[in-house]
Amino acid sequence: MPAESDVWRLLRGDTLVGTITVDDSDFPWLLGRFAAEPAFEEVRPWFDAVLAVLDADDLDRFDAVYDPIAEAQPLVSAKGPVGEFLLYIEGDEARFRY
Image 1 (cartoon, helix red, strand yellow):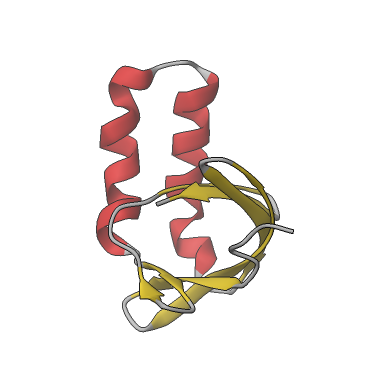
Image 2 (cartoon, one colour; image 1 turned 90 degrees about the vertical axis):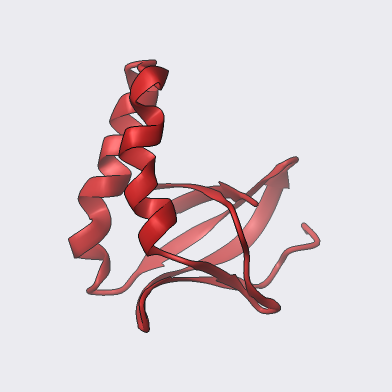
């Protein structure tokens, strides 16, 4: 069981976008189940664009497609928001590092 076995929250302003229940780790990544809230539908295209850039190995575009995620959505642990983070969501699976 990973050390970060708690529930993380993805917010957009005061709105809960989804939760991540961490159930595994692959240092430095934490892996878990993503439970989307209705507000996730508004930002799903951002996460889909990141996955498309990674799949295409088009890393020159990565910052441009990832910036909306990092700028608009704090990732919050039980201890509070984290600063910088990388978060990938595909279906009900999440992978992130901070």
